[in-house]
Image 1 (tube, rainbow over the protein chains, first blue to last red):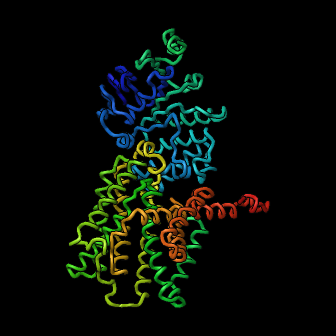
Image 2: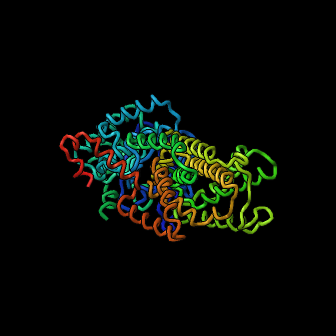
Length: 233
Length: 321
């Protein structure tokens, strides 16, 4: 479904990504782990179109999207959330959800039904008329997550989706994610919450110093000495 | 829009409808000028308050509408009703050019670029004496020929205000408006949600320029004179003050701001330029105590009064503090 080949990105003299290659299959839940500054978010920004890579190519469902702008990639079905929450704060929860659906020119009834169902899934229905800025951090993260789903995204990139969550909310998030995965959605998740990412992901990719260290079964990657070394220094 | 806002607007409209029955020409003149400012402040609010593009070229675009309409009606002998539309189209064309040139600009960069554009327009209007009659101003035909009564102008102004304000309302509360408001909130997040940011920003620039052009054209044919005074930074400051004091990013704000500040301006104009000090003072007070302007206060009051929990406990006054 998604193929990344030899992705390289510099920021001044710093090489943030050094020839990263990665493939994601349909309906996978891929967890990406790595120490701070390893290039996880940069990889995500390059795939979703926030940055353009210096070298390398990205294919999505057979189409080369390397140079497509972020909004075109979104309309193709590549959704995302942000490490630092980026909600439309003065808009209501409901309006936040409608914005992406409007861009797909969905019929009104269809988008309202979809928004209502997603709110139900993350248990935020009672807050639909509240301004996004009035929600707790955890609720805002859930909202940002389901907002990305309103794009009918085939693949969704989640950047530290459980940061700031109350423990009860983590389960709501995991249940929702797994339900959406059962319905055919693909996820790539950057996460520092190791127990959560181990529970959710079907495959784990470890990144360090802008390179892929290892990819495979979550338990084998997590216990790999090289990965442990990269994490602990 | 909140119920309280709707009631205020309806009351204002009904009062405005019957006002000529009780008021003399002087009061009607002030209300006509208020209508002009409401149109300009509302269209600037569409640009700055709803799409987040703070432009200082709005009065220059208004002047483009005024001069274009004035010149075309004078030289081609076309009726001002038609030339006002042509003038507005000219303003929106220039708005399109500015919008495209400033596509990637935000904040102070956009502000400075639009100030520069506004100054260029002001200088051209002053220096191209043969066409514009320079700082003396250009005499243009009246909208209703030689009719001296204010009443036809009053109802035309009222009709135009309703048209502009209603169009803005329909736009802001449409899917297009919601998309534009999402851009104001966070351009990057909007783009990540599939929003064509550049296209929407340029469209808003063009629409608001068209509305400013309509207002400018009307003013020219009402005053039968148009001068470069319209493009000064002082005039632009007044429009911004009206939108901000009324409530930036709110629908009713520029209407309240345009009406109240024009009324105040009439009472304090004998102090010359000192009336700007009063505007400045009002602006500081509003920004200090109600950053969302008078409309923000109304919204807060309305929400408190409609909250069943607060109502049941009789805490309305406590909460409003």
